Image (cartoon, rainbow over all chains, first blue to last red; front, side, top):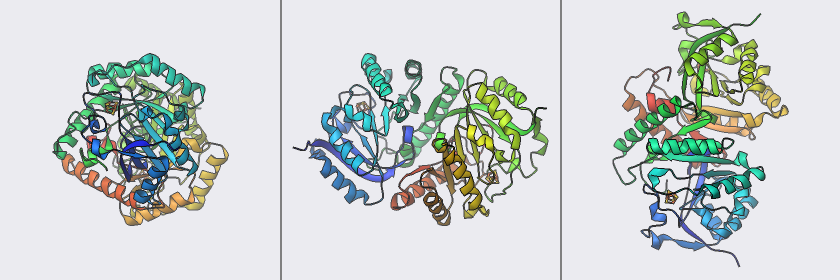
Length: 243
Length: 243
Ligand code: SF4
Ligand code: SF4
């Protein structure tokens, strides 16, 4: 019998605002549930119970139907986000479904779990969480995941991304980059006000922090093969959901 | 004897604000001279004579020395920009020099000339100019360039980028994408006020136009495998040079 997956949102087409395929035209599928509870999580509604009534249990085919209803023929790329979609053991049923339709797939996870269907993801972002999140990275697990992907020849489809709020986070990011020097590496400005409606102030604050992060990375000889990005969607839409 | 190249600026490290390696930490080398004169050129000082006194004739080794003086050990990536650096037949002396130092190289050109040293560029952006530029694209030439790069197995190192100011530009971009469907394709918001010092107004205008461009691309079934980006450096620094 077909597995069901807890889906919170299906929306798009819009553009990916972050990471290795920043700017990519894509549809989003957001799954519910996370094994972390980052202090600054910008999608805590996926795990804190506040959007419990919006979770629907859908099969791969039902998600696909909804993607088509929403996106028509205006997409060839789907981003699976969470929460942590890597909690969903059978999500390979969905990724295989998308592959059959010749859709490229992006997925982001914090790297706390491996799933065999990672090997089917075209743009896999692993985003271990820095000290400001108050979470603790299991580096043995992360080593294992990266090693499997390396052995499978998938590293060209993989990137590491660390969100940066402060200098301690940047030191953590530097350590991550040195631990996995052959994996494409991204640092991203953190948004520490995920509830404000004052979009103008939020944009200014994020651009000022982006400039700070560029300065920090520019000054470091340990962060040379690095890409530094803001969250484009937050610059355009503030904290609005579903865009 | 070593060739000399007309160099206008050497600066960095900073981040690449546009295109296929947006966010990449990099040094910039800007060469003088262009065979185009786009109506909205944001670096017209490279060809309109206004910065004539700043042009220095430097050998590959002299440029490298200057990169090291400025960037120290804080870079592994160099972006060559212009003007149109593809006017410089012997620039391969410089790209080979960088390769020997294990430096990754990005270069942007509008696609009016081919040079054999294109095959050594890690991130080659070809940016044909849309109608609003008032320039005319030589598509036979562009076909030839893309074909050589395809034959040489370099397409994974190549992208096409079109700057968009209006709907006519977007139609042009759609035609370019359909002509070369296997080449990674980027559209970028144009900056039509390259002289203003009112950074706040410029940012707001660029973000509004970015949102417009996202909406246009989202609505098109001919622009699915596409990435849509703003100019990050203009959002952060306005029209300031050398950042
Ligand atoms: S891992 Fe991601 S979804 Fe989970 S709590 Fe942290 S930021 Fe939120
Ligand atoms: S091709 Fe580039 S440098 Fe030359 S005029 Fe056009 S925008 Fe300016």
